[in-house]
Image (cartoon, rainbow, N blue to C red; front, side, top):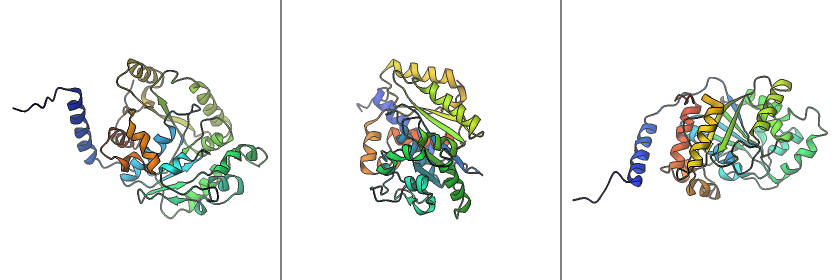
Length: 296
């Protein structure tokens, strides 16, 4: 007689992951007719912003989409996670914004997927906020460069993700001005909504003065810990506030998600059968329109 008990929490989780993997394997995601440009923003640090940028981009690229990640954070964590070179002498997004270097001259192909590229960030970007102050059209320099690149690229890109720093300075304003959609990761922890009001006010300000097409289209609950009641409370509060902008898929807090960047890989390739990898593949399905959003 087998000692295996499929009623235990671990057994249920294993069965659930297997079921979700099978469902994802059968999916063919729709590709947008026009390039969708997302700015990933949250003024709080450590909320899974870069993790979401990298893994959502990788999950979409895995399905056949052509995806560009622009690393606009001086820490360069997105560049690291995608396995692209970003030493101080590497041509980078700093050169694009400050020196008018074409994106085509700095973009690198990620080694993970053939349809995934990255505009890296280097340490020079740390001083860009100050240098931007004296430049003409300082809020629109990234948009100008990106628009030119999208017109000239050989094959249409389907998605662009701009990973912003955890602040609301000129770099983030450049990211918001260059995008049509804002994606906000919210951690399932205490003070999750703290500072979000200011971000939304800034988005509204940018929309009114610089970029009338900008909208907050996607909110993702991340760092979910099923062991705490607080996590569920935060998810419910976020859904109450933002309704169908909130993705149905919730990203769990896992060790493997934290480990992947140190190996220069997104979770999709680092541990493709993990809960984190499956969550981001399901998010890719939602973002692409291959699944409906929860309505509250």
